[in-house]
Picture 1 (cartoon, rainbow, N blue to C red):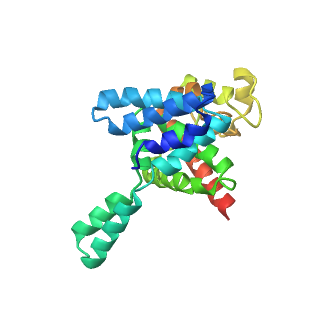
Picture 2: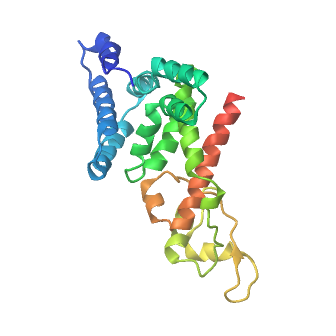
Picture 3: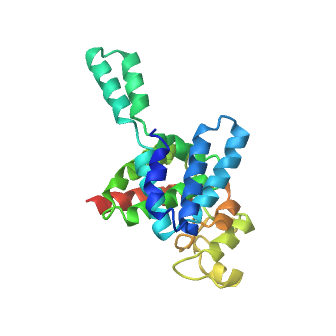
Length: 252
């Protein structure tokens, strides 16, 4: 990781104005550095919450400045990478390979892992990638941020995590209420309307199939926290697949 002096150089032109946005960006960056240096799990989780809250408040130029710092300040050290690569070229041992792999991994990845210590961290990272993709063509130097997020999200989630469960009248009422609340394609007007939606066997206890769209706001903390664990994995996978496919399509 490079010296924090980069942050001072980056914000030096705006230091005289000392705007609220600039101060907020510097605060967020400082929290990220503190989070990376923290060793305790409990204090790390508290720092992760604070850093994520600070990040979520960034927008416009302040958000772009933060991503610029992520791209520059939290990238691998080129000199360390070069030395490790040369050492492995001279001696292709497993020890030298492991050393090379360690120095090639950007500090951003560890930062994102620590973000995930906070509640809602994974959803925040998915949303972060969405914000990066929105301006990636105009900001190609953010490509490393996108690559790190794709790598981590792809390693955290796969089909093996999913436990798909059929939604029928034995499904907990809380889940059905959320289904009604977050229906995005055809709005459901209460329980009576919901009973008109099922398609399938009419036998008591038989499974039913609902013609429904995805929840309108899967990233909502309220929606996310109240879904059952299997549904969380299903919706998380849908979000991640959509985010990754969106990024792949845009790059093509």
